[in-house]
Length: 290
Image (cartoon, rainbow, N blue to C red):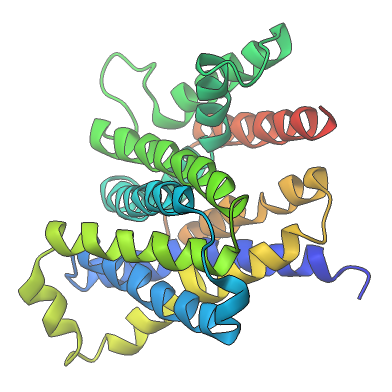
């Protein structure tokens, strides 16, 4: 199909956007962000392992360095999932999704520091523009108190930083082996980290609760199917096209929050959101051209 790649990426982005809404529903039911995050990754691990076992010989890791980079990606995923849900809990889905979407800025800054990318006035302008958008979105400019709590803003930005770490680790590891092997190792690391962090008795109670199907759905669309669809899609889509389609994720999350969960955004917050979305898309165009 001519547009199969774009369709795969769009579907994955919609799934990721809906994940925040499902997590918000589960948190309203009293489940903690750590437990919700663990089940999202655990179901993702089962899916990744199944994908790996379809062709075990072809997918078998052939480089020792793959393990290190994949574990780094797993640390990034653990931070991203957990901090994203904590940001939703402390602010709203719309704010958390947009703050997480600042991940390319963290990738850009780390590339500057590591000498992997040359700086330019345009790129620094994009960074300044995103910072302006963050200030407007969070209400940090208000002397009488921000529209978003410091916890909501910091965990949202932390989710973006963690996502950038995942992107970096995944790119390095997948260059040395197959995507199924990388995802399996990354999700194994993820589950090990969250197992230590989460409330184990609470996690065990999920298995006998009526919310178990919702947890499974969260994992399927938020980690299992979505990651596979995105990887298949990115192989068949130009980077510039993929960057535009990826905007579906924060838009979906924001619409879910506003229309279904009745979250609200002020005009200034909406302007800040628009500045971030437009700037990140322009930056993605620039990097793809380079």
